[in-house]
Amino acid sequence: MYLQHFGLNQLPFNLTPDTEFFCDLPTHREALNVLLIALQSGEGFIKITGPVGAGKTLLCRKLLNDLPPPFVTAYIANPHLAPAALYQAIADELELKYSLNTEQNQLLGQINDYLLSAATLQHRIVLIIDEAQAMPLETLEALRLLTNLETEKQKLLQIVLFGQAELDQLLLKKSIRQLRQRITFSYILKPLNYAQARAYLQHRLQIAGNTHVDLLPAASVAALCFYSRGIPRLLNILTHKAMLAAYGKGLGKIGWQQVQLAAQDTDATRVRWRLLGFRPVFPWLMLLGCGIFAYFSSSSLPL
Image (cartoon, rainbow, N blue to C red; front, side):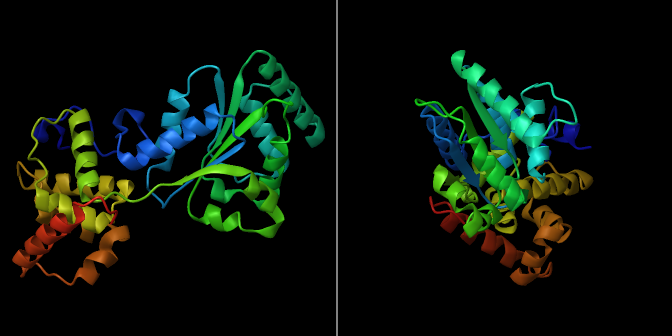
């Protein structure tokens, strides 16, 4: 692997949501601030959406790690569940004891009793659901019923939904309009622009041990940003592959040529590479295009 070649102590572009690599970019900081403010103010439903690979799961893990007492969190990673299974998953997260024969209403009662007890201890329970767009409609309605559990002063349960853009379409369904009305805070994660992508890539390289600021020249970052459309997951995939290509040739830097090879080798970017219309016999066109792209995309506007 290329770790020793580039002077790294760990892989900088793994796809796992490692909070050590969390980059405090404006879009992710704003989303985290929305979450913290909404939770501190006691809101019942909060929603964070964004395109596939925008960093929702990493933000979710960051929230789980950073929420201070008296917050107590429950996390559901796979919400494609029937209502009864959802209640069981919540009970498991809250470490409640129940039998497999427990009726759905009884389990809901146990959860309610736990939440009341937690409220007397000044604990604030937060249920965090990742990939919420996968929830069936009847399960979303069962989720809404949980927010009916409240005292005169506060909600007994706060719920944070992380999901893809399909979640917004799902919430437009008439059958769950009551849930939609209860979402008081929401935020949409946006793709990174050139300046943000450059900061993101350099941050991950620095965390991994890199001390060479010129490892990714401006043209290479511009090419990565173009092919990835500013999506962090694609940035990770393409940069990892480009580093492998540079290592294979014994290069000390990652050139735009290696980025182009990475884009050709990646299903999610191959079509975009073809649409560009460049060929290896015209390398100067690619370099010129990346330079122009870097210049215009260095503004604060997202790509």
